[in-house]
Image 1 (cartoon, rainbow, N blue to C red):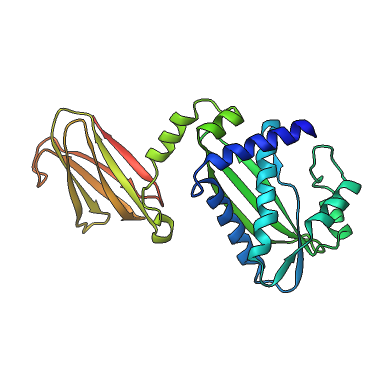
Image 2 (cartoon, helix red, strand yellow):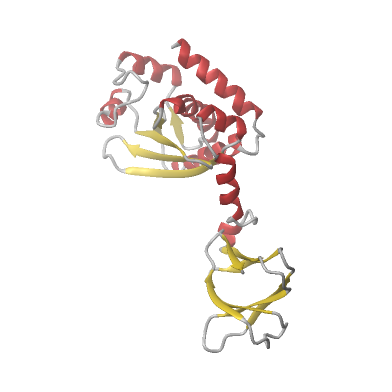
Length: 272
């Protein structure tokens, strides 16, 4: 228990050094999403089970997120209630099913019935090289039916990466961000980007056209040697592109191709 407490305190200090807009805000979004789904239910009692993790060094991280749910979810509740945490933990200590502080998936339903919960929240923490993925579900105790789900990406910073023992995370994070749209509302607007990296010594005009037999010019940009230019916030559809030294595409050495825009993706096309 002492070792576990030290790990948790250390992780708490790390997270407190992150900007609030990064880690805690994203966890808060996950809490709000689950609460909005549960507020559509009437008069149900919710229990929050300890979040699961895959590796031993992720235990403190899972415990921190579990604590955030215990603290944040009751404040978002309007038509449901969260079981008293002290009562839950008293039952948990009396009927603990695994020494690591986790409820065995094969008996989680029975435990929910024991503590008179109408539904229970379970979650898993997945740590990748550039992000942490949080998966949440809420299960009806009686029927076993899933009544709410959630998923959230949590950021990794230098201190967090050191704590979790991640190698090469900065390069991998940069690579991920390079291929991601800068538009924070890209998912709601259903848009994405495409950028052209000019690795030649020539100046180029780049033109994109709508798909179709009667395609029309959608947009044109110019890119200097060694630089790149982007078409931002494009609709999720296919385009033809033409790379030419001539603004009107009359050059004899045009480079042609097709691209398909994906949501929130910033695709990179290299000109060699």
